Image 1 (spheres, rainbow, N blue to C red):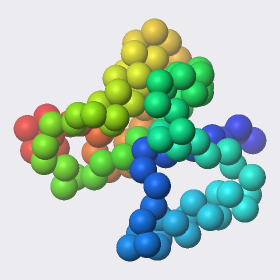
Image 2 (image 1 turned 60 degrees about the horizontal axis):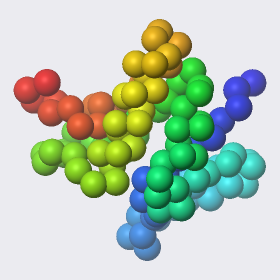
Image 3 (image 1 turned 45 degrees about the vertical axis):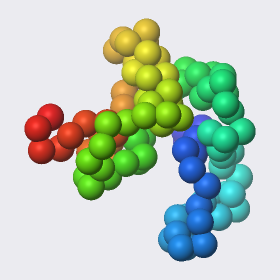
Image 4 (image 1 turned 30 degrees about the vertical axis):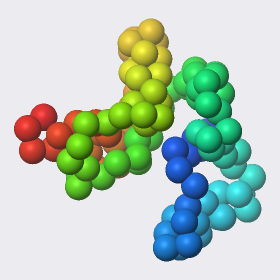
Length: 105
């Protein structure tokens, strides 16, 4: 089996019941979850990026603005880890890679 950990960019709101439910199932299974708000310097993220696979489920195909702020730092850290670990770290997007315009590439 794989050692799975979850790094969360945002906390679920009341309107996001599906997300909160899925997160609850992970907690029940004992999967460690870290919130970006609890990792402002991204050191916990960088520590966890010594892995083999990152699943990018941050933004969907409807994202239409440049990435900025906290999310930009998260994505920069993932890219840096991927470049440093060539070819040992694979980033797999659920639908479209975060920060990539799906219409223009």
